[in-house]
Image (cartoon, rainbow, N blue to C red; front, side, top):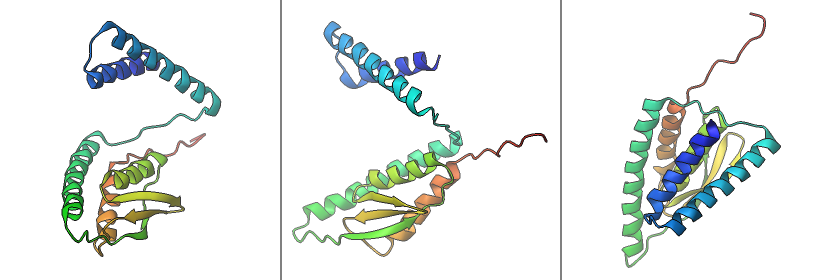
Length: 165
């Protein structure tokens, strides 16, 4: 059933993003979805490690809305830098600690850093990310700590199962 739902979602996204509803384009969409599902199924058969998604739905929606606002603010800041005659760039590499307990939470945090214009997650180490900022300010670590706390708040960790209790 999961494969059918995935096919429907992928095909719907294909249709929405292409915006072309001709027979050939729809055929390419169907072929792309089938190839994607084939590759994903083969990958699942090889690693046998399912991705478990344990997120708080309402907190996740709030986080996404907050992140969109942060992306808009960062876009404006980067635009001002680019359009400035002096281009006041202050590049800097620094570490940002993360507090997420799941791989998914860490991935969401790293991708949130990278989605925000002017910053990118470069490397992962135990408990921290190496971050590159185009225009570093002393407030950046505090802003990333706030983002880290918000991502940690959307994780819905389940208690480990105990045997024989």
